[in-house]
Image (cartoon, rainbow, N blue to C red; front, top):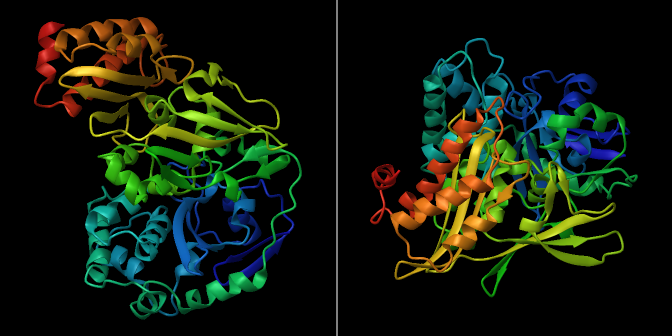
Length: 470
C-alpha cells in the first residue's frame, strides 16, 4: 500500500506504483491545478513539492515535475500541489506576487510558477534573486515574455532576503504557506510508511529518462523502485577520491560544499544540465544506464575518468571503467539483476583543470546538440594527463581515446591543440538529425574542443589563435 500525505490529506492507495504522480493527482484526487503540459519534464506546468523528513527530524522540500515521477516514489513523503499551498480567503505571498506584477495571462503555467516560488521560499538556498530565477528556470510561459514573472520572483525575494531563518512558523506568519505545514513532520512519523513490498520488475530510480520514453508501459507493468535504497545514496571524499552513490542527484552535487570548493565552476557546469526540478529528481545511475549519446552527466563523468562499482542481486561487486561500459547504441556492460552502485573518480588537483561545454537549442535546460568535457593536468605548460569526452557525435557517449592519448606528454600549444582536433574529427561519426546536420555537429565538436582551452587558459589562448591556424 502506497502511503503518503497529499497536501493536508493522508493517502493510502493500492494504485500501481508505476503510474505517474501527475495522473494520480489529477484523475484519482481531482486536483486539476497541476497541469498536463509536455509530459516530458520540460515545461514545469505539473510542478509539485516533495517534502522528506530527514534523519534530524526536519522537513526538506524540493520541486519535481510530477509528469515523469512514479507514484511509488511519493511513499512516505509529503506531496504538495498548488491547491495545498492555498490560504483561507487570501492569496499566498507567491500568488500575490504573480498577481501584483501582472505575471499571468492564460493562466495555464501559473500554478507551476507558484509552486516553484513556494519551493524557493521553503528551500535551504540563499534567498537572492539569482537563486529565485534558478527555482523557476524549469517553468515555461508562452504568454508573458517572462519579465513580469521575473518581477514577481524579485518581490518574493524582497520578502525573504532580510530574514536569516525561514522557519515554518515565520513562513506561515508571512503568508508563504498554510498553517497545516507545522503538523507534517509528526504526521509522517505517525503513518509509519514501511518499505514497499515490490515485485520484480524494471528498475526505476528518479524516472526522468524512462518516463519520457516508456510512461505507458511502466504504468501497466511491474516496476521496482530504487530511489530510496540507502546503499545507493551519498557522496563522500576520501584521499582525494570522490565516491558518489548512483541514487545521488545533480542537486546533491550542487549542494555539496566540499566538492564545490574542489571543482571550480561546478554549479556553472551543472546549471547547463537541466532545470531545478529535474536536478532534484534525476539519479546519476539512471543517467548512465539510459546510455544516451548526449547524456550530460555521462560526458561529465567520462572526462573525470570515472570507474563504476556494479553490484548483483547476491551483493557481489565488480569494478569497471566508465569508458569501457558502453558497447553500442543503448547497449552496455550490465547483466540481468545487476545495478550500478557507485561512481568513483579522482578529485582534480591544483595542477589539473576541468571544464564542461554544451550547445543546445535553448540556452539552458535542453537536450544537447553536442556536449563535451575535459580534465587536463598541466605543469609548466606541459600536459601530464588528459581525458576528453564528447556527446552527440557517435552512437555512444564518447570517450576520446586517441585524442586523449595524443595530448598526453605534449606541450600546451596552439599547434598541438590543432593537431588534436584532427584526431578528434577522425574519432567521431555524427549523423544528421533534428538537432543538426553531421557537418554542423563536427563544427560544434571543434568549437567546443577549442573552448575548453580558451576557458581554462585564457591568458594563453583566444579563439582567434585557432582561427588563424585553421
